[in-house]
Structures are given as structure tokens and as C-alpha cells.
Image (cartoon, rainbow, N blue to C red; front, side, top):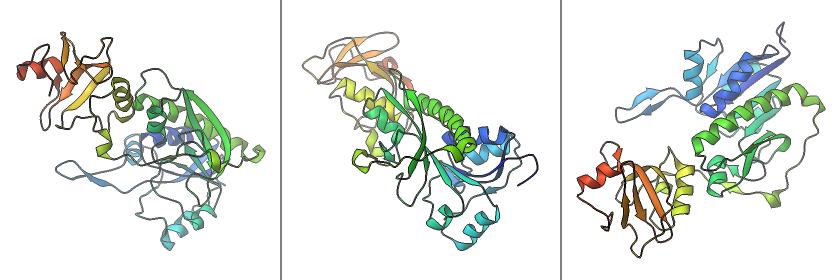
Length: 310
């Protein structure tokens, strides 16, 4: 080990959730981050500008002197050899985006910081799933990885209360902060931890979110608001017409007999009837157009109270 460091850590992660954990590791005097693995740069936007993942971007912007690796696959022998050559004591994984093959798992203990209370919400979208199911609590699980999908032994938990009306971005921030503290604690107390096996009978799977999951109808205002909390900012929620609902909340008004009837027009919002309940809408974005207030939108459409929003 390098003089002055207690633990050599190889980090694997890609989005902002991962960055919060990596930043804590980089700032800790007892830990040496020997390398960072993240996803390859990808073309973004209409002009397909090659853009680095969040973790790489922050490493460069903040001037951290650490080697960055962006292999397309971890199954390549040369990649496995390079990991082995870094001689990590631990491999810390947080939303990396690739499955670790057994050859990598055998190099050092691999600790995954998964954003749910395993075995609940194994898979790709645990944070959104906790909101969609209206859970009161969620958390982070530090797990010793095995060849299964989020099936490894549990090393530690941290719990996070889901506040009323909290959207997914806010929950991401709280969970990433919680994960960063939990990670340090587990690394420094690893030898004293007795891993706990997961009970598969209690498990559930959180599927990868697709753009079409964001399409909504004015059926149930509470259900629609739940999707808004889970899918903002991506994929967002939008009507079949492509109109995005950017800022909404359930209304105090009751529904009318007509779905989509304009019940109220205020300076800051309008109220629409759903089959069950009603919805206050503050901002929208028509397909291929700019964002605007809901009132500006209906004025442009020459709609008034009693008209149908569609």
C-alpha cells in the first residue's frame, strides 16, 4: 500500500449518484482511489456532441489526479488484467451500468451501494420504484456483490424517509449523500461486519425505465401525480398529444363528469378534471415548442372554463 493510505479502492460508477460517493472517497485521507471506471463518452443531442459521463466530467472539472478508464466491456482479458494490476483492496460500485464478470469479482471484495433496501427493488430503477409504490421509507444497501443481479450478501443499511411530494431528483440527492457516508463506514469496518444473506422470497425487481413509461392520461389525479414524482425530469410525463406536464399537483377541487374539463383558470395555474379527482397544472411544453405557463397555453388555444383541455 502507498504510504499514508490505509485502503486502496477502485471505483466504478457513472451518474451523479455515483459522484457523491466517489467524492467522499477522494477526500478521505485514509483511502487511496487507485482508478475510476466509468461508461464511455456518448453522443448527446441533435448534434450528437460527444459528452463524458457525469463522474468523468466532475473529476476533470475539480482537478482530481486519478486515472480514468472507460472500457466498453469488463469481459475483455486486457481490461481484467488492468484491474488486477491496480491491486485494489476493494472495488466500490455505484450505478456503473455494466455487470461485473466473475473474473472481476474474484480480484477483490466488490461492494455495491444500491439505492434501495434490498431485497426490495433489485434492478435498474429502485429510486423511481419506491416513489411509484408510495413508500414511506427507502434507503441504501451496501452489498457484497456476487454473480447475480443485486443478490449478494448485505453488509449494511442506511434509511431515508421519503418526504411528501418529494420528486425523484430530491430523493436521488438524499440517497447519494446517505450512500457516501455508508460507503466509508463499511470500508473502514469491513473486517468486523457479518454479512447477511438476502431472502429471495422477499425480493422485487425494478425494471429499466423507458420513455413511453411517461405517457399519462387524465384518469386519476393522485396516480398521475405519483408518476410525475417518479419520472421528473426523465422521461417526464406527457399526454398522448405529446404535451409535457412540467409542474403539477393534485387539486382541492373535485372532478366533473368530463375528463379534461377546465375547472378553474388562475394567474399561476389552471385546474383540469380527471375521471377521479382534479389536477392543478402550472407549466407545460407543447411538442417541439418552448416551455410556457399553463394559462399562456390555454389562452393561445382560446379555451375557457368549461371547455375540454384536449
